Length: 216
Ligand code: SF4
Image (cartoon, rainbow, N blue to C red; front, top):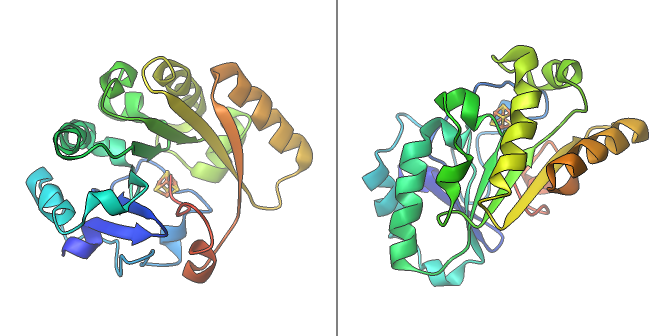
């Protein structure tokens, strides 16, 4: 079970702590592959207890990796309390940068303002932006929060920048028109986050060439 919880891609160690997600994004790699990097099947039989996650991490020498990233076949902030507990434990073990790849819906998922909770525990947050309007976002991400999703993503991104040193917003370029990419970049700028365009990919072989799996 443990290599479904922690997996390696390139020089980065990833944690797959949940398969829950309020979205069904058109581009999500989990719709066409079950493995990423050394994780042969990121579909979990059951969510690992947070101590199981620490046990999975104990199998790796954290000093060998550039970064520890919460990014699996689900939205990690669906387990925000456990995620932050794990960050606190890792902080006590080793000085490794910690990043969370997220759809930015943490506030709606958890029903509270969550950005302050990241302070001191997370070094970087990468938020999927994906579209320049609530309607376009809904057409791509099919969030259960509907048209409320994108405004919540933008609000969270802006706020988390006050508590986390590095915040990035990403857009997957799936033959996306230049005007749409420009509109996304303009929205991103309003949050104060950095902007990055990711190429659309469909296979693990392609995935291995990229710095991150195409999830969240
Ligand atoms: S890309 Fe991320 S937010 Fe979208 S369905 Fe996949 S796990 Fe959920």
